[in-house]
Amino acid sequence: MLTTRKYLLVAIGLLLVTVALRPVRRAYSHRFGQAAADRKLFHDGDLVFHTSRSEQSQAIQLATHSPWSHCGLLYQDKGQWWVLEAMQPVKVTPLMEWTGRGRGDHYVVKRLRDAATALTPAALQEMKTVGKGMVGRDYDGTFGWSDDRIYCSELIYKVYERSLHRRLGTLQKLGDFDLSHPAVQAKLKERYGDKLPLNEPVISPGSIFNSPELVTVLSR
Image (cartoon, rainbow, N blue to C red; front, top):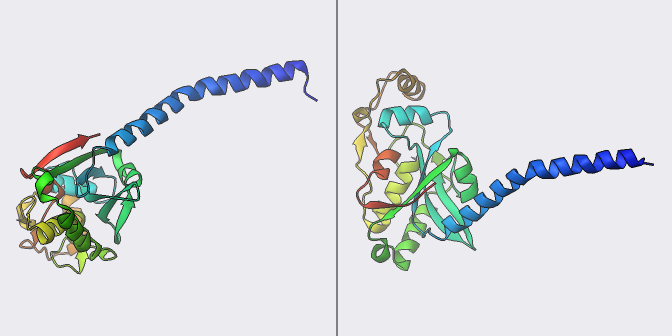
């Protein structure tokens, strides 16, 4: 049996825990409410970017001179937002899971300037069909341009090009990027050995992000 003194100590302990958790609950409640409000701004076909915490993220940022190293396409299904992305393999991921993988949970959502007229129901359906055709394919760590394997910005570029005949960003060659940093050179050596395909077409997340055809919808 607990004595009066022990009851008092337990009560004080519970009170201290409750007080300590209040800032955590407030922060969580604010973040949850903010996320719910943010999602009301999204449209199917929006593009989402973040700075990945993956092993190759630093090399991508250094080579492209951009903080953006991963991207995907937003779609809503049964009241939930999903990201079509090229990971291993190409798949759809719940938005909250996707944003949680970014550095500092920071992400940016972009949209076609003329989305109101360009992204018709028929166009969106065609985009989903093209994207669905790539689901399950392996991730392309060598950034080749064939459809056998797919990387993140290649997925976005090809979905928009093949469904809307719109090219987002500037297609470059591997040799156009800044390959001088030791971290970049180490990753190139790991992926290609001594035979760099410098003429291979490449589309980077940063190039799509900077496309003049896009406007920023949200930055968190």
